[in-house]
Length: 291
Length: 156
Image (cartoon, rainbow over all chains, first blue to last red; front, side, top):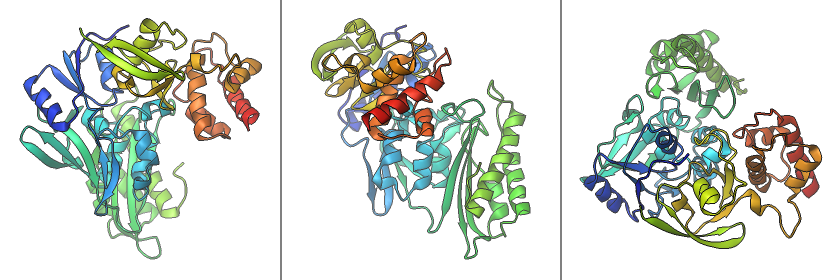
C-alpha cells in the first residue's frame, strides 16, 4: 500500500527549512527518521501535502562535546548515539538509546524526532529528564532553548510552535560519581514499546548507603514522560534503606498518572512503576542488575 | 507529482533512477526496480520483512523515503549471492532448514548480515536481540537462530 502523495522538500540549511515551514504552515510536517511519521501517513492519521526532510542539512546529525557538555544533533540516530565515543560520559543516554525498539528502528529513528513525537513511552526521554538536558529550537524569530522537562506539553504534544525545528540537544555532564540505569519493562517482547520505563541517576556518599542526590524519570507512566520529583525528595539526604526505597517507589507510583490502553491498564502501569522504581534503586545501591 | 532523480549504489552496482516524492525505499525496490525479494509485511516498521541494509545498517524499507537513498549504498537480498555462490548466511539457512513459508527470510538474512558485520562471533542472546524486530509467523525462530550461529562459525 502506497502513502498518499505529498511534495518533499529537502532543504540544505535550518534557515531554509524554517522558511519552507513558515510559508506552508498547517499542511507541512517535518520528517526526521520517519519511524513515527511514516506509520501515521500509512494509516492516514496525518495527511500533509508537503514534508520537509532534514537529512541534507550539514552537521544536523553531529554528536560532539563542547565546553564539557554533550551536543547531539537532532538527526543523530539512536544507533549513532549508542555507539558515539562522545557519549561515553553519559552512559544513561547510551543505555536508553540502545533500548529503543529493534536494531533497524534504532538505525533510522532520531533523537530529535523521538522528542518531537513526545510519546509517553519514549526510552530516551526519561534518560534526558534525569540528565537535565535542554533542547534548542529554531524558528523564524531565531533560536530558543527549552529544558527537556518543559518540552513535553501533553499527550503526543511537544512545545514546538508552528514553523519551529528542534536542532540539537545539549547535556551537561552527570554529577561526579553518579551511577545510573534505565530499565524498560516490556511484558510482551523486547522490541515493543515500554509499558513502563524508569531512568534513575544516583549519587551516594562514601559508604554507598547514603543518598546524596537522586533523579528519577518515568516513561509510560503519564500522558508525557515524567520526572518523579516527590519520590526524589523523599530519598535525598536519607539512608538508602529498603524501607526508604519502598517509600520512594510508593511516591513515584502516586505521582504517576498513567493511561489505560491495550498494553495495560492504568492500575497495572502504576503498580509496575512501584516495582521498577524499587528494583532500579535497589540495584544501583547494591551494584547489581535490576532484574 | 515530480519524480526525484536518484543515484546510489545498489547491490555493488551503480543505480540511476527516479522515484515520486512519496515513494518509500520499498516502493522503489518492488515497483520501480522490480526487485521483489524485499517483502511488504506490515508497512509500519514492526514486522521486519522489508529489512535492507543502508550503508551497512539495517533499515525498514517501508519507513524510509526513497529520497534518502541518494549518494548512499543499499544492499537487498538479491545482492547476497556473489558470482553464483550463496552468502554463508543463505547457505546456513538452507542447511538448517530455517525457512518455512519464507516470507520473513529476506529480512532475517539482512538483519543477520548486519549483526555479523558488527559482531562476527555473536552469542545466541546477541542473535536473538538482533532479530528481535523480525517476526516469523511460522514460529521457526529456533532454526533461524541456529542458522545465524552456524553461518558465524562457518565464516570464523
